[in-house]
Image 1: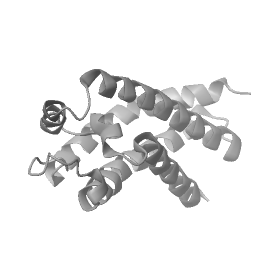
Image 2 (image 1 turned 90 degrees about the vertical axis):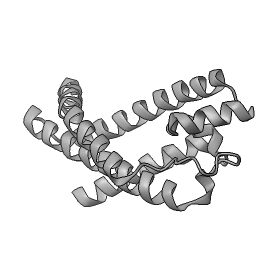
Image 3 (image 1 turned 180 degrees about the horizontal axis):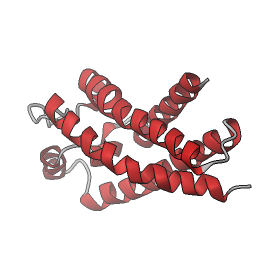
Image 4 (image 1 turned 180 degrees about the vertical axis):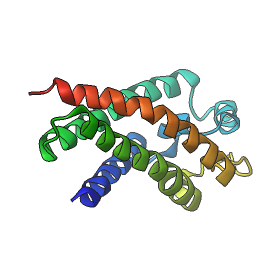
Length: 159
């Protein structure tokens, strides 16, 4: 059952990203490295304020949906009633999501789909290298140790 839940959680992650960018990679410019963003601004394809606003809206909705989904899975689907079990499940889901993002989203989807190439930015690297992915994911793995405690505490507040 846990494999199905983890898969569904990663599908929700992918769905949220797709909704956030829609049919235009420029909608997700905040995901790109600074050199790509600067080139896009230089080309006049969008403005900094627009990107900042889209980032704020997306990240707010993304974190809300992913957090609520995780709490619902742990508390109501899995029926967890102890902090330690909630913590371990939250940590598992957050770590799987973290590595899924780095490997499946960043390296596979972004790295192998023409959708993510923004015209005029050809030649500027926008896909993270494996060392960059490993470093970022390792750092986030540590951060999720704290994030899992926050999720577990939220689960414990529910009836």
